[in-house]
Amino acid sequence: MQELKARNEIAEAVASYVNLRHSGRTLVGLCPFHNEKTPSFYVYPDNGSFYCFGCGAGGDVITFIRRIENLDYMESIRFLAQRAGIPVPENNADDGMSRLKARILEINRETARFYYAALNSKEGAEGMDYLRRRALTPHTIRHFGLGWAPASRYSLTGFLEKKGFTQNEMVLANVAFKGRSGKTIDRFASRVMFPIIDLRGNVIAFGGRILTDEKPKYLNTSDTPVFNKGNFLFALNFAKNHANGQLILCEGYMDVISMHQAGFENAIATLGTALTPSQARLMARYATEVVISYDADEAGQKATNRAIPILRDAGLLVKVLTIAGGKDPDEYLRANGENGRVKFKQLIETSGNDVEYRLQKIKQSSNPQSAQGRVAYLTGASAVLATLESKVEQEIYAGKLAEETGVERSAIMQLVEKDSEKLKKNRKQKEFRAFQQESAGIHDSINPEKAQNLRAASAEEALIAYIVQYPENAKNIMERLPAEKFITAFNRRVYRTIMERVEQEKAISLTDISEGFSVEEIASVSKILAKFHDVSVTKADAQEYIGVIEQEYEKIRIEKAKTAQPQDIQEYLQKLRSQKK
Image (tube, rainbow, N blue to C red; front, side, top):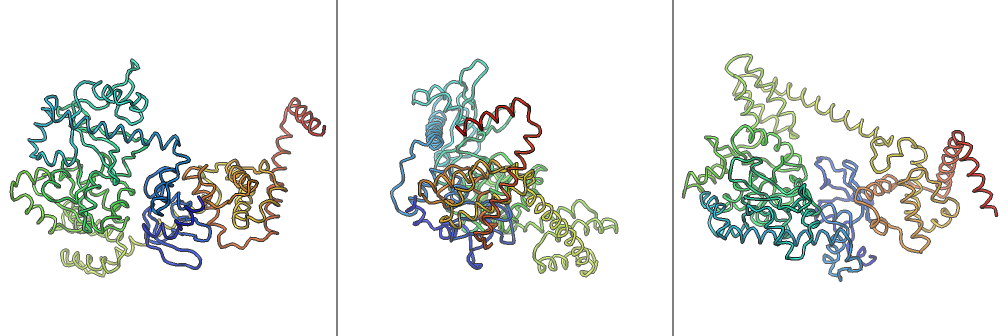
């Protein structure tokens, strides 16, 4: 572990994903785990930790890789070992979760092969006919690994059982479920199957389309240990190699596949859910611009309006492609035959940006020919321009609106500035409320006892930070303050973990203790270290923290004694007598 840490300095590892700049002894940048425009993500090279004061993400280099690459603990260790060119640790190779994930990936791989073989058999004729009607070539079908789930609800489970997989493993992979009779049943039946593949080439999930009017039309794998639908994008494993700074965001699997077949290999789609900030940040790793190419129906337009601010917040330029006649991309390409590619390329090149798209939608719902309609149009347009960060951008669009409506640009800008101030005020109020709640320990899911024991918890945190900063003083503190006197359970657990390592004369950095804690728990410890990073804490301060913890411990002990039953008191006294003997 020491060599792993030495060969994977946190600043260097993080810099592979985040643009960092120096700020004193620390490094700062835009957080990769939430959308922000003002940097609140700090890296502390001296103690090997990071912390975001905006979203609360934090930890060591292992935690960072776990979060950014969506890996478990042992997978992150192996990732960092391979990155540093050192032998991959195998001492924990039998780790339960790692083994389970590996088994699920094996099941998914075999399942994809099973579905592909079924599609290319007599049993899959219905599915193959459908794909051919959609004008997909054999090469495209093979490239995407498309398949067919047979009508029998026991065909896949029977196949996997012969491969040595247990019924429980199939259920955990979500390729099967337990029926009322207790038998394990195929999750997908009589559906065209779309394997979902991650960036490392693993089959992590499936989407299945029914060919009848039965609902749901699309059935997708639920979340599993290897898959969370909000963190992945369909076909990004192919599109990332063809992005050239631009990705095309489509609504469904077939749109993406048709686009790739037509030569637009930078097309991707979400996985049956609305776009998430996590997916937008993932896109931002491979592109600077996203063209939204959703269906032209009402649902598609609503999805477009929801996606625009999420993509913008991720720092992406946004364009919106509009197809006349309400066609989706797949229909448009097929309808235009050999000219489909050229015409679609023209649509992309001439598509307006997201601001123009939103202003056009507001204009369509107003009546700018009348005075009342112009007021409604400008009121809605002002709300859109107020969300823009660039004053220049606001001025440009205000000028266009002035020409269009005959209203002075200065008057429009006054309206925009008024809306901008409202947004800023609301944002500041929200941030202040969040700061107050955090300071008081309200809604702290990791240490829920903090809010009711704020004085004790604050002293506990300060003492933990002091010990990590000055490990040479840890033994003296341990002799005076046993872990049992910590009031809050989480801080007690952290303190006990550190002290156990001190007794064994082992290192106590964040990385050294991270294995026994979840990502969220390590973030909480990282927050403590970040809070006290630039605070000069002395031995006298540490003694004062110990005193506060002892005082609070005594208060609670006395309160408990007041409400104790006679039998409890007798048992307590008996315990004291036995200890004296």
